Each structure stands twice: as C-alpha cells, then as structure tokens.
Image 1 (cartoon, rainbow, N blue to C red):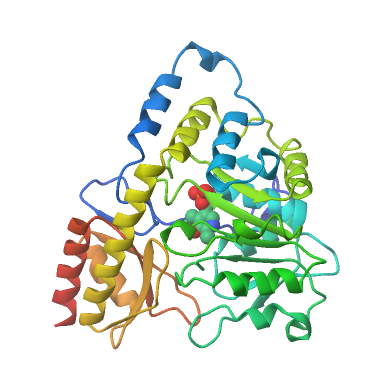
Image 2 (cartoon, rainbow, N blue to C red; image 1 turned 180 degrees about the horizontal axis):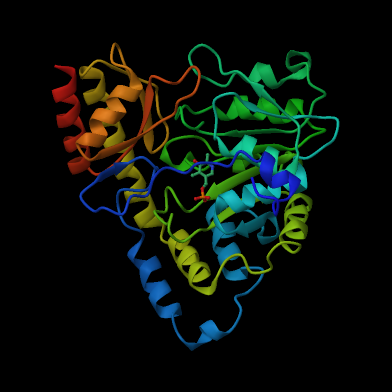
Length: 358
Ligand SMILES: *Cc1c(COP(=O)(O)O)cnc(C)c1O
C-alpha cells in the first residue's frame, strides 16, 4: 500500500497466472498451452508482415481478421469483436455488458478465477452459483425462481475451467432462453477440444455472446488474440468500450498471423485431434494409477488421487521438473489441473506418478 495508490488499487485482489519459469528442461503442463506449434501458414504470414509497413498503425477494426473469423463461424463480420487476447475481450464485456446496479452477475463457484477479479476492478456485484456434487453446472440453477437473484447477467466457460466438463448445447440454450432480460456470456476458450459451440444460437438469441481465444486450440498463446461473437448491438457495446481504452489492441503481425491461423482449417483439425487422442490416453493411464479424472472436453484434465493430497502430488512433480496447476481452494484442493502435452511429456508425467503411487 502506497500513499500514491488510488483507493481502488489498494482493494484489488489480482489474478495470479500460472508460472512461466525461465528454465528449459521442464515438462510444462500448468497453463493449458497447446503442445504442438501454431499453423506453419500462420508463422509464414507473420514473417511476411515484418517489414517497413510496421511504421504504420494497424487496422483499428482488424477487418481482414474479422472476415476470416466470420467465414470460419458462418456469421456476419459485424457480429465479431476482436481484442488483445480473450482476457481483454472479457474485460470489455464485463465493463460494457455485465455491470448492472441491481442485478448481480452470476457465475459458477468453481470457474475461471479471472471473473471475480474483473468484478473487483469494475465494481460489479456478483453471486457464485455452486456446481453440483459431480462438479457440473446445473442449468436449472440459472432459471427463474431457482436463482433467487434479480435475474442479472450470467457468465460461464464451456467447457468449464478448471473442471473441463462440458455443458450440452440444449442446457446452454435453456439458460439463455430463461434470461432474455440479461446478457449470457459463454466463454468458449476450450470449446474446440470436444464441446458444442453456442455460436449456432447467436442469431436466435439477442442476449447471447460467445467469447473465443486463439491461445488454446490455435496454439497462439504468445500472440494475444481473442474475439467475441454475438448480435451486432452487443458487438457495438464492446467497440464503444474498446475505443475508450485502446484503438489498436491487435498489432499488424497479430492480425496477419491470426487470420492465417483461422484460415488453416486442416492444421486446426489435425492439431485439435492430437490433443483429444492424447487426453483420452492420459485419462485411462491416470485412472489406472488410482486417480479420479473428471470427464474432460478441454485440453487439460482435472484429477484427484484416491489417497494422496493434491498439494503433495504437485510438489513431488515439481521436484521431478513436471509443472501442473494446483488450486488451494475449497472443494478442489485435492485436484490437479494437468494440461495435455505431447505423448513424450505424458510419458514423463506418468513415470513420475508411478514412482509416487506405488
Ligand atoms: C485461457 C482462458 C482465457 C484467456 O485466454 P487469452 O485469450 O489467452 O487471454 C479465457 N477464459 C478461459 C476460461 C481460459 O481458460
């Protein structure tokens, strides 16, 4: 606390990202990065964009990138907003669409831990809705009287993080349909690894917004590009916030690389399938070692051992140079979130766990 700080800054409880250690011989399974590289066509496009044109500002509207996204999802260009990573897109969403005085924002008690952080930064009232006993979102908890809330806006990831569990599209639709007076945001950071996207519903429901990132399934966490899809008036709200914050959130190199990555459907399909196959193999192997693994539709698994505490396993793995994510939080303190790596990385992880569990 410094006397130079604003009153707000002193009260903030900032998000703590997974570690990005500088040492090289690590099996890094703690931040859900893709184990394979980005599309080679995306890398080429970025190399090509490094020239004297960098003296110019980028296109503030990212038109070429938004066209690529529109083609991929089969929606209009005016239905797309892009930003510097989906965390920035989410920040604008919280400020522009989820802040309402008498209607608290609702999200699951176990969910992306950035949500309460944005609520603190933007002074948004919120209410956490508990997941059920099997760590699932229950659509009925967000419908009518069941909520006890004044029907404020809603946000949840699908698949949820850090559980990895997907909500079926008809359950998503139930929540969206039951809350026509408020925006429902579906954070689809992991949707490409096996869940059903709610983009199919945006033209039916004016209160639905989906948020996406190139950090996970496009293997471009280092590029910082994310986007939102919804009806045009929701997108206009985000544009208004953005143009009060930073007119040029996506640089020239990122616009070129992201558009090429979105266009490379073949690489995307193959790289996503690699992760899905590897996840299924890892799940079986973990179960054989005595782990309870939640059914994942993401690029990570959330697992707890029958008898060994989560913190102890995370510490043991760290000594073996394997990093996984452990959250010291109620209900999930014995779980580990393990990102899906290459098959070689899975082999190192499993060998270490075998030494611990036998
Ligand atoms: C990773 C993640 C994001 C943020 O992605 P960036 O585009 O890298 O900022 C957003 N939401 C969820 C649920 C995530 O897991």
